[in-house]
Image 1 (tube, rainbow, N blue to C red):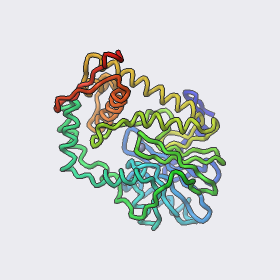
Image 2: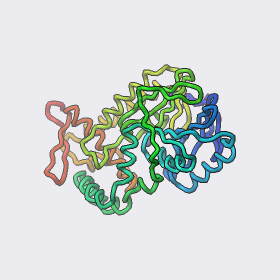
Image 3: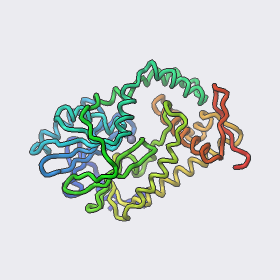
Image 4: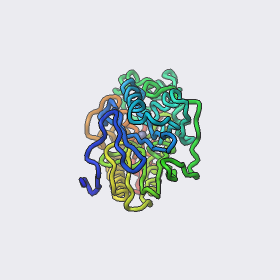
Length: 346
Ligand SMILES: [Zn+2]
């Protein structure tokens, strides 16, 4: 078994496009392409006996639709699709939920906060968002990036997500979900998205982790321009402990990269990573700094508009965390926000 950074990977290769690998009995792995640096998402198909449950769906692109058609025409042809479960509202996860739900007349299962975030983001109007984004970037000290960012982003969410379905079943996190002949406990992750539903089967020792616990890549934990005061990093780090409480030998099925063993170690690595990033942010604020100043120190590289949006969100997540712990304060003249280390915390 391949070992990288202490994590153990039983599969060295992912399934080819349009094909499935049965990773544990009645649970199949497939991949869909993404047009980003992170070029794929893992999806899961569970065999419910009389039909299939799909967990996550891929981006709304004709390429992904074509692959789904191929999958339902060949490896999944013997039984109907019964439902779609989405771990969270990000486009690579929920992008084709509406399309699958409509095409196969099945419900979408999703948590309440995730479907709400999906609908709100889907309906965001460019005319409303442009001034919000402009103020957000300008208070961060990123004036040069504003024009470019606003011009190129628009409502990128609704371009990547099919119209959301009406037929939605809200997941109650206190009740297990029955799939593939097993009970799956819903474990909620916060901070990466509002109410991410990870699924854990004690019988199988398997965790479908969504984006909450990924191997090898750091997670996007971001402050969104529409909610500038949020502290998602505290939520992310806090809810990670629900995952490290699972058994040592849990087999983790993440939404990106390869399935692995080593959940507790991965949680430790993630906590350490964010504490190192907090340390960089903390030091950057010693002499007073704008978000843009901190971002440059935290990332040390140039970004295109898309990446800049996420880097800004991530920088703010670390700054808001330090503001909440009382280590730094934010002083604003309404045009530019400046962050200072507080004397008592120095
Ligand atoms: Zn995500």
